[in-house]
Length: 521
Image (cartoon, rainbow, N blue to C red; front, side, top):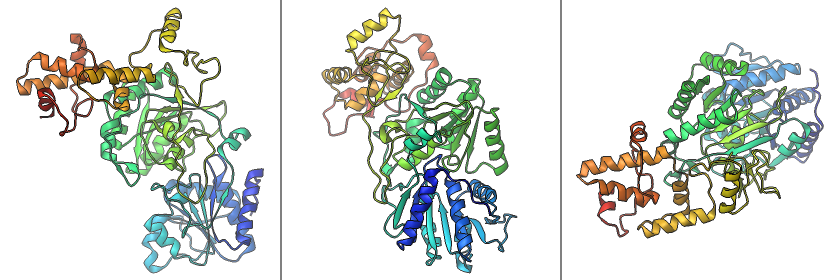
């Protein structure tokens, strides 16, 4: 066996692990962020353990791709391992190290698991699951080392208590960027879905309701449009809400002339591998993944992460953006296109976070997005100009619009959004008999012509069903958007009637006139 060459922070992490073991703590979680060489670390831990002990070791993973990755890294330090995963032909019980899928181990609990004095649990943020707990309980006397880049559970509870006794942090994202192990990123935020009506179940947005909110023509079109406008020709990994959402976005990219592919957990292994290989070679530019690429996937040449899936999970957010932060030849930075509001929820990818065994920290950020290009910053520089596109950001709206006119710039409908504009929309709506929340006013301000035409056609359909006159459509449209409807025949011909109201209807116990009652009916 050959000892790998460790970076200084990796050597410190190994020393810290040994210190915890000397203190008789035998269940240790090692936080190894994306780019810090997690598999190198656990390969060195296993190599050192085998040299000092006559006991076997086992590495537990939860996906087939991670089995291959672990085997390759162990082989690089001279360790040959057997595989326990279904009917895998690489099974060899005589090897002192086994790489096993959690699913296979769980199925074999009744007839016994392979012996081990050291258990490595990869992606250990999954260790709180019932199957993982039952498998780990079969190794009561073994040293348990969990490895993860994201030590946060989906239910926001910590990984301490009966799971892990101590925590070691190998490095922080800012350290890794300074060392060149990760590239910095340019984050951009675009229109995000309205999630006020999406229920939250077990700490995460309910999948079916989230798909309804996200899988709209306007949002899907924005994803393709912003990619073509800002990152054409670059390889992008896209994270959707569902398989249907993913396929729809892929179809839109394909229709726009951009090569794209969809993969999910049900994609046959060979087809999945073929799509990933095509992405790595560049023959596929956009790879959309549902439940496949968030963990353990490496493609350093990927430069763009497209977030089309809103998530309340800090772990999932960090895993998604981490797929594009690895360095590659000629790659100076990564680009995040956030169409889901995730950076506002969780902060920048390079933020140093509260790594601990306690509850997941809250990290909502008060960030600023450029009204022209969407670039995100914590605060504007002293000159008030966007660092990316140079547009003026911190002037009063009137001065900013006058400056833009002098520079020949056109204001895009619904894009310049300040507190005063939102308050004006709320006040105007109130005079028309409609109480809006700030979020609803923001949605009105950002409404596109396509969304407005879709709402107009929905109202026209209601009017036809109820036998109402044209005035009903115009007045209800004005109650929502504050202006009378004015569309060309072409705009209406290209639009599709919305399937639900643009804004939630007033509660039933609120006073309302015949128009609201008719629309609800």
